[in-house]
Each structure stands twice: as structure tokens, then as C-alpha cells.
Image (cartoon, rainbow, N blue to C red):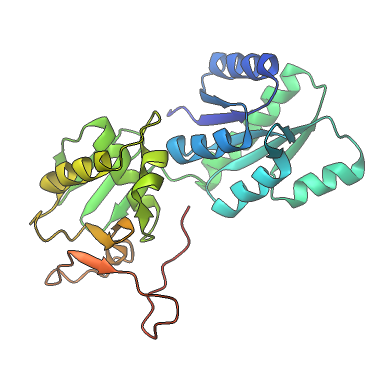
Length: 259
């Protein structure tokens, strides 16, 4: 069975480490964050099945992060909070959280609630482990890509870049956004993205000079061809550059919401 990835966003370093250790002992893959912003970054990088959120974070309200995660519609949410009145619990659940656990709590109850949420995720397939876009299949569990029935050998960074672009569902992403979402560590060189896009195109594009899968968006960055996601691509069409027009233009293209 594939291990579910759980992200812990908890301001208390001792509690964060303790929860992480117990979850790892239970067979889960775990990432840990200490702030709201780190929690968002971890979400982009790992696409966790479950996010455990502390209601009190140093750079914002954990309920705000819970609501943001709910809007992404990718992960289940377990709120942890010292606020234990009925009004507090109702308010937390209304942010979109799937469960609410008040502090202090016993470790066995915590693990039981996590297990119940992960079981729900596996039953409903809330977090897909693969994406199929026309002739391209991206397998998150095995971290491999299949194009027209043939496996394409990608580096770990190329895979992460492709997955983040595909997951944005046609939304253009700037170079800085791609560096934040697809790179495992902080890098402040936008040209790094261009280099990896070029390398990736050489492996997955029929004609890298006229890319159809990963398109350039002028003055913005790159996007995954939304026609592939809609499964209605016309193989005779090739787009190299996409111009994003101002909002007042009559022929404005509207992209679906990103993750």
C-alpha cells in the first residue's frame, strides 16, 4: 500500500516533532512546517493527502490556512487547537476542516483520527495518485511519466516541474512561482526554470522548437496546455507563445482556478 503523505503545520517545535515521529512510526510520510507560509510551500511541494494545522501560527491564523487548503480541494484537513468551546469548534469546522481536535489530546486519539481521515481519503480518492492528460500520464506514486505508451526518463527536478505545471490546470505560472512550488530548496535564479523547461521539452515534445505540451506565456512564464487536460487537443495545432491580454480585451482567455 502506498504511504500517505501528511503535512504538519504546528508552531510548537516539540509537539511538531512528537507528532511527526508517531506518524512516521505508523508508516506515513511526513513533512513539517512551523508557519502559515511554510505550510503553503509544503502543500505545493508535496501535495499531502492530509494537512494537520495548528490554529495559532506565528504569521497568521491557522483557520485562514485551513480555509485556503479547503479551497484547493486536494487535501483533507485536521485542525488542532487549544480553543475548546462549541463556538470555536464550529468556527473551525466551517473553514472547511474535516476534523477538529482540542489540545491537550492523547496520542492514541490523535492517531485514530488521522487513520480515519486517511481511510476516508482512500475510499473517496480525494487525492489522485496519477494524472492522465491525453497521451501523457504522470504517475505521482512512482514518479514516472509515460508518453504514448513509452516511459520517459526524467530527473527528479524535471518530474516535479512537469507535475506542478500539469496540476495548475492551464493556469500560467511565473518563474518565481515555479521556483517556489517545484524546487526542493530556495533558489533565486529565474533562468534555472528556463533551463529545466528546455531540457524537459526535449524529452516530451514532438518538436521542442514548437512546444505543444509546455507553452510559453509571454511576460509571465509557462503553462501546461489546457487542451490536453480537457482531452480535446487537436494534434495539428502547435503553440509556441501565448500572449496574455489585458482584462479589458474582448477575447480574454479565462483559465480554470489553480490548485
